[in-house]
Length: 284
Image (cartoon, rainbow, N blue to C red; front, side, top):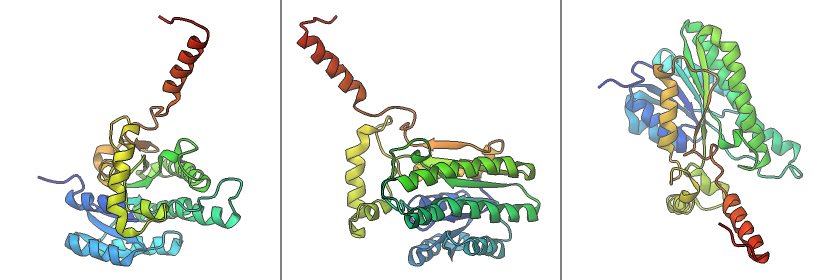
């Protein structure tokens, strides 16, 4: 059976682990040739070796524009063209509050979360135009792209800005047949979570399972996300099935941004009950 990406060449930044790794695997399963662009050389090389000739690793620091440009050049040199650019690499960045966020902390976070996405758009689009072909650019946004309180200040600011990049790209690049869309993961279990909470890397599998179980009831669908869930959405946006979509941001979060998952309603009901009891009111 043919795959959805047969004959296509893709770059996945941050492709050596987590959502990126899951996407690289799925893209290859569906017929793509994929460049894994990541700073983690050992993990990236191991993944490329496991996937065989369809995958190629290029060490890439996405905060450096010349390295993103080099990753695009490497994809063309290795596989002859480029069809899909997935700007996925990011991290939580500076965890300070707005009151404590330093200029250095803000700058470093925005370079990784936002500037990398700009670079990915710029160099992928130039290659698509040079080829004379349409192309798909995908970006990992976040639940933090829609509302405050999902993450620290700098990351939330950055992920809101990512949506702006996607929408501006849709406006500027549509004339070339280039599409720009984003996926917005919610609570997704990846190994990077242990780093965010200062835990040892070797505890990642155990911690992920523990958190997944603890938080499952906070999700409308009754479970947390896994990298494969996000990868499936990226596959759709990379494929011709989404050929008339651009400028969209798709939540892939089990319904979290669509539904208020908090104790507000139960707490309100409890307060109303207490008020009625205090006043001797029998409610219907």
